[in-house]
Each structure stands twice: as structure tokens, then as C-alpha cells.
Image (tube, rainbow, N blue to C red; front, side):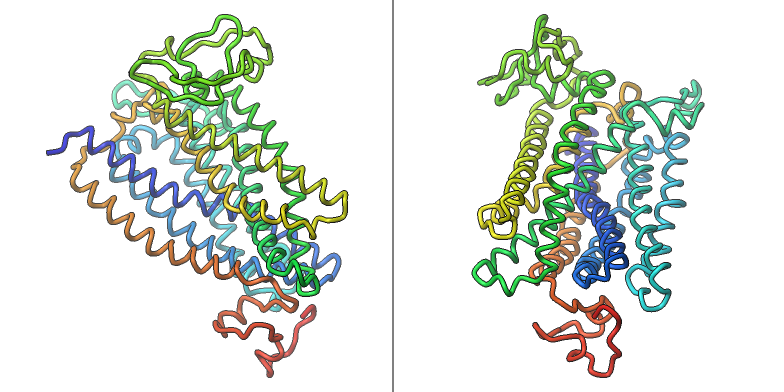
Length: 479
């Protein structure tokens, strides 16, 4: 009923589904961990209660998102040993080390200090609590470092040799394995994307509450105003930085993975003197052409080679069996780029509003920021699709094909497990996401309750103070 190709396709869909769910949580928590460390540092420095209120507000959301990220990531490691056991056997000697280092360094930092960050302010003192906040933020960055190192090696493999008898990739230089040619660009691009993702979620939540009380300014807490201002600063600073980093990353990809860039650009044909930048078109891979193409002459050569008349090779130089699925890569790339420029627009708009003194009194800007709240999550998913689908038909680019990486699979079994994953993921993580959205729907307040208080009293009366909720509890400094 099914053949091996069907089983491999289902295994790819299964991994894509689980990693897409997982990727959303680290994309948010990497930036949020740093945001929390900054808020805690500002509270200790200024003793301004709005920073403590914001910390307590967002640390609850961080705890939930972090937990869901950990749980959703566990499943992928099992898939390496089941659906992709051949890949694990062949590439394991190279990627096993960095994956282990991720656990030993990043996860130990996160897990070791997370409890202190969440519950330890009154128990360990302000200095050690600040250390814990910084350690969790550093742990999330280390996690991105090691995971992206492994992923980048799969795109631009280096520092290895292939054993003639077993076909295994054996490391010859771990420095080259870790710091492979695409790794610095991919790391900076992804971490910056995580910061932008957090900035637009934070900005969207603040914009929601600014819009709700736009006719009653006195009901907008200082914490809400502050988090909108901080989010817009991040958008204004990091959006243009991300565009520049994306340009560097694209040039590096053109050098090491030209077929991916050809698919991103929709260049089926080579151009001898200046390649156009196609804004729109319908890739026709069967006929090897871009139908209904709308482009700007020579702009692609200017972007990729910084020369209007530079020649660019097309997919007509790549054997068909080595070409990635062009339509998916072409459109996911455009979604990512469009959202990146939209983020830049919001950042510039916020600077103009700040200069005019109406940053917190501009409903149009607030509506735009609210609409853009999920834009970072969508952009990182689109970027991931562009990167990973653009690497096909290889798992280790140029050396190991996806078709040769899968275990002997039964399509019916893979299909059944895929359905089970879909049902369980949407139920479990859908419920968690719903609760996060409920937390975001409540504006940060003065005297924001601690996480422990919320756990002790899950149903909290709106507008009451910590003393009213816990009349026997001694009020802590800053409350």
C-alpha cells in the first residue's frame, strides 16, 4: 500500500511538525530570559517598582514557555533514534559531542538556576538572585550556540573525514566542526531573530493594554508604558541590524549552498550580466521557469554580489535531483523578508512617535504593534523552512542524502505516530498557549503578585493588593 518514499516523506513531516512546535518556544524564551535579567538589574539599580512589577509579570509567562519548550524538545531526540537512526549512526561521531555539550553547559545552567530565578528573591538575597537571572539568560544563549553549531555543520560540514568501511563521519578538527563556515552568520541571525520575537510579543501585549485604556490614561500603569517603550527601542535598534545580518548570511549561503539561494531568488536560468530580483512569481519546477514573474532588473546581483552587472548562476547549472523544492523555499523566504521590513517600519514609526512625544498616545501605532505581535514567531518559522527545505535533498549537505538517512520505516506506523503527535501537541501545548494568552490579557499592575502568590491563590480578585490577598503575609520591600 505504501512504499519507502511515502515513509520517508511522513517521517520528514513528523520531524518538521515537532521541531516547528518546539522552535516557537526557544525563539521566545531566549529573548525573554535576557529581558527578565535586564528588568531585574534595573530594579536593583533604580529601586523603581515598575521594573519589579514587569519582572513578576513576565517571569510567570517565561516559566510556562520554558517548560513547554523543554517538553516539546524531548520528542525530537527520540526521532533521531527511530525514524532517522541511519543519520544518527553516520553523523553521530561528529554531532554527538556538541549535543552533549549543550546539555552539560546550557541545560545545567538553565535548570540549576531557574528555581532561584523563579522563587528565590527573598531566600538568597538580591545579588545571588541577579546571578541566577543572568545564568538562565546565559544558559539559553549557550543552548542556541550548540544547537546552531550542529545545525550549521549539517549545512556547511567541515572538520571531518568519512570512514571508508562504515560510511561514518569522523571528526578530525572539532574547532572546525563547531565553527563551521556558516555558523557565525546563522548564530547571529537566529539570536537576533529571537530578540525581535520577544520585543514584538512584549510590544504587542503593551499595545493591547494601551488601546484598552486609551480614553483613560490614568488607568495605564507605569509598567505598561515602560514595557512598550523598551519593546519599541528593541524594534528600532535590532530590526535594521537583522536586515544587515541577513545580507551577510545570504552572501555566505551563496558561497556554500548556491542551490538554496537560486531557489530563494527563483532563478531557474543563469544571468550573465546582472540578475533581477523577483518580487513575485509562481515557480514551475517541472518546466524550470518562474511563471508570471515580476522583478526589478539587476537588483539581485547588487544585493548578492554588490555589483549591478555581476553574473549569477541559476538552477540550470544544478542537476534536477540535487535541486531543493523551489516553491516552498521561494515563498517562505519572501514571508520572512516581508515581515523583517514590516518590523523595521514599526521601529522607525516608533522613533517618529517618540520624537513627537506621542509614543504612548498613538492608537494607530498601537494597533500596528498589536497586529505585529506574532510576527517574530511567523518569521522564525519561515526562516527555518527556508533554511531546512533549501538544504534538500541532503541532510548533510553534499554528502548524505535525506533518502539515505532514514531507518527502514513502515509508512503506516510513521503515519499513526504523526497523527498521535498532532493530537497530543495541539491538546497539551494548545492548553499551555491558551493559559499564556490569558496571562498576557491581564495588564501588569502596581504591586504585581509574585509567582508564588499566584500559585498559592490561582484565582485572584482584580485590583486587590498583595496585603488584601494575603493579610497575614509580611509585605516585602518594593511591594
